[in-house]
Length: 135
Image 1 (spheres, rainbow, N blue to C red):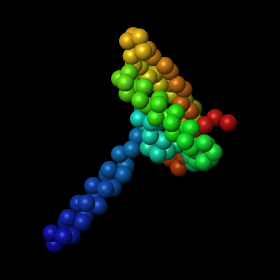
Image 2 (cartoon, one colour; image 1 turned 30 degrees about the vertical axis):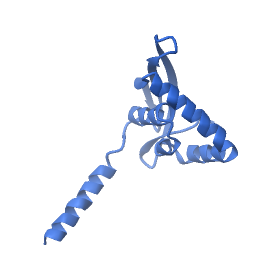
Image 3 (spheres, rainbow, N blue to C red; image 1 turned 120 degrees about the vertical axis):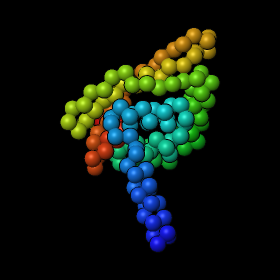
Image 4 (tube, rainbow, N blue to C red; image 1 turned 90 degrees about the horizontal axis):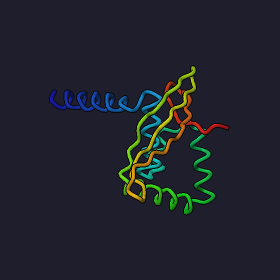
């Protein structure tokens, strides 16, 4: 009986945790920018990409994987050194499409605070918001 209760508890925890991913366009965009621009982790970023975007990224990696990975690592190192933080500045939802403006703020080489903004396009795919490259 204890084993059955333990198995049910584990299954329930797994089900709850599986549903804990970001649900809103701004949360998905924020996680995506964190993974790419700050952490330099393309594999983590893929969790937030539409299927079409994943295919494009995989093709780009296959064509020049070393260059892309080096550039992401370089960007990530600069962002971490600058203490970069990402925040949502604006979100617009239009049906199954959304745009989110993300601001990344950190210290520049001169020590002054700098902010760069990035517009992230999203689409709803299988009921979940995903980052999509505009074609």
